[in-house]
Length: 259
Image 1 (cartoon, one colour):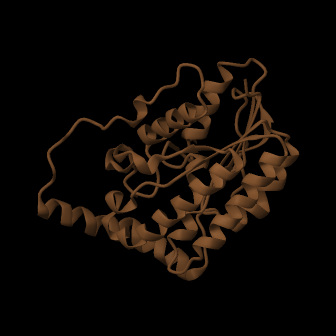
Image 2 (cartoon, helix red, strand yellow):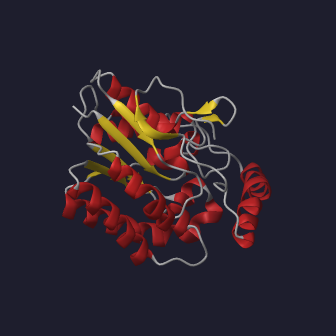
């Protein structure tokens, strides 16, 4: 069973949406690590992910440190930040993802990556970006098949676009969403006691009326979308000045570093 797990990526892997910066972030990678730790007393875990990172930054700043830790398991989740920009090169994003997956696989690690859900269902104002995400998902499947990568195909399951598993910012999973992604990853790795129950739809609920839906869209745009766009226009990132929360392999019980 896996003994050295390293997670690389951006805010989802850092755990944004599951806890906070005061009490600490957990996130799906931490939750997956807890499952792995229960299977191996020698288990060690590092999380190099930092919010706001573009895929070139993940490649430049996290790949080599990950390789130096000599992991036997690595999760690579990056590229969505690039695709949500007004201009992006989907082919270049996929090529960079493949470079990381190839390097880690050749180093002997079992690699896991993901596809992305229908963001138009999560945030209707972001629907215009969905075609590029659909195309990217196709490339991810090709990369995974080529390199024998475990793939968490969240785009195939409507529950992954259910707003009830997303934070109010609609950019990050909430605690329920992080728990679901951890379970999905465990299933992709065929860990003991994992199954496909994570993919089952949530109980149905009444749809909100038009006025309430319209108000929620306006409020979301004012509170979350406008600040996000402003950071893009000013060249700033939510990850500026931040470092990895778990830069070294250590038992899961070991406290994370100060940020």
